[in-house]
Length: 221
Image 1 (cartoon, rainbow, N blue to C red):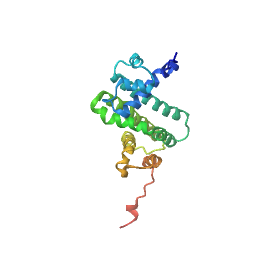
Image 2 (tube, rainbow, N blue to C red):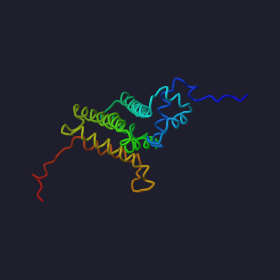
Image 3 (tube, one colour):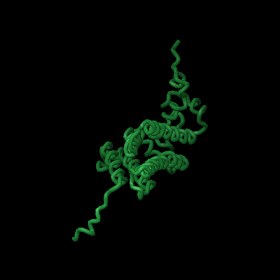
Image 4 (cartoon, rainbow, N blue to C red):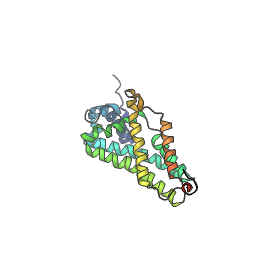
């Protein structure tokens, strides 16, 4: 009698929801929300379609939960880094930005591209959830660090923390999701370490206090 194939789901029951959500993100990113079937997600996770429906009633719910899972994991890792970090606020900002963008994988960028493009029209609720749980949460966290730096005298007090954080976070997100397009538009390609480090340095140089010399009073053009 032939041996019965043991599904991956049956071997690790405790990790069922997480593995399904990881598989769903990968399949949605590859195929797009509209073209993805529950069967595709089940096959990628090594489970039956019934197992998927046991946890998620619809494809829409699966995507919404997958986005939430993606953000929980990402911000959980950032939170761990910041809790363990000491020193000046600028050092923590470097750590945050490196953790948030330095480990961005091609599949992660595909997920971002999916949400920003197809899902925005196919499922507006998912796009709104991504905005609230991703970019908005990210720039609020960065803005809170900038405010802390202002309060302890590390940064200029006249800086608009929210605007600075918005520009930096959304700028890096856009650049990251453009990288796969460099195959067709080579001018888009940039070394990611260079991109992240230079962006953070530009931000910090704009935040640090500067000594202003009243040149106009002592120098005539």
